Image 1 (cartoon, one colour):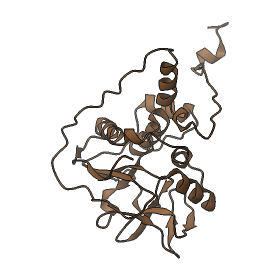
Image 2: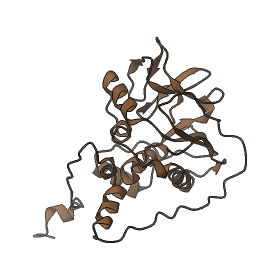
Image 3: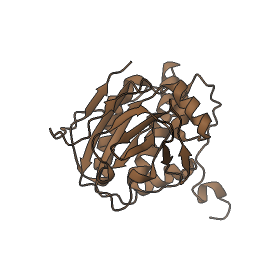
Image 4: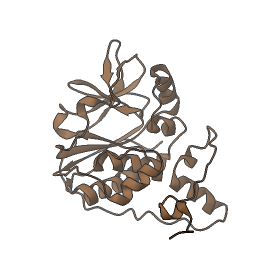
Length: 256
């Protein structure tokens, strides 16, 4: 109606809170982390996340990660079969758009949402494009990776990568590779939920000049006690929006 505030009429009247983050406060890079800090200060009560037993299928379908790099203390995988990777629900697309994230597909949007909402970066591989089990190792001289941003990077020894029999698939904690990226035709995925060494992530990111949302959080420190619960919540979200049947979690390493 004439005289109404334009922002409200256009649906863009959400308040924006701008928080300056110091390097030691990786917890403040998520909605959950900020809520936790406010609750600790006596402003409101932190709600539980409702992590539950998902009744995962007892199979050995998920690739077994082989931890060979000292820069990755904990790595969890879960294979989810029979997913349908379509558009995300409108509410999810709106929330991502509001913070400058372009909605891509349900699988990708879920990983982005978890990064900003819970401070838990995730990665999903198209399972059909994997060759054998996964190895978390340091890159070898001469290896290259074509990343999801379309650029090719020359890797150096000491950079933590995830690889299979075909070669390097992704830069651990920084960016996935194009060769195993998910698309609309993806039906089976392997979810990766892991911890990476902040110093190694920072060195690799600077050397390759990649500033991703995952790197920004991992190099400032993510919650080491929220890896397995984060995996269970992510599986529940993927099944809610994309369907599918999940394997048991395969856990390599342990929480520091």
